[in-house]
Length: 169
Image (cartoon, rainbow, N blue to C red; front, side):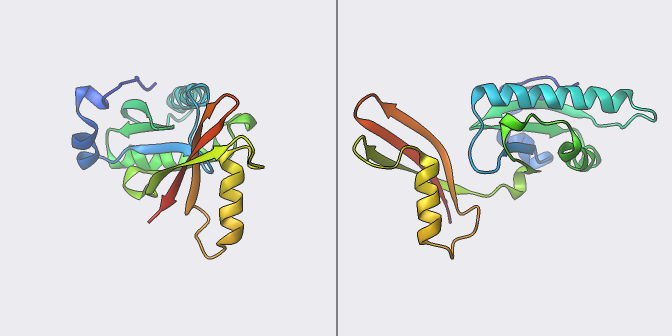
């Protein structure tokens, strides 16, 4: 099973490890995962790795470590073959419906977005970043499906909220 690490595997910095072997990323398709969702994702990964190791015949996936960062789970496989196997197995594992649709990819393939903050007053009809994303996508159908992403929301009680929205390049 995977061991958790805050800096990546074996104390290496994230940047130095990504140069050697790209991390496998698990995140929500439409938005970043919350801390509780990340914990559930990590538990499914841990269970999946254990079941793979105990399978007959065993499926060998070597993992250097994991980290929870920016609404996603990063998994550092020890070699390219383990990374490929992990990417093949992840979609088949039993994911809870409350996690929503998840995406799995190598860190080197991660879609980049620039985060923007949008203040939404309490008098607005928009009640969530997701509603703003739907509005932007309907007004700009030429944008790619993952071109606008809702990253989160910071509320100020009675005043409104700040929507944190990612826009792709």
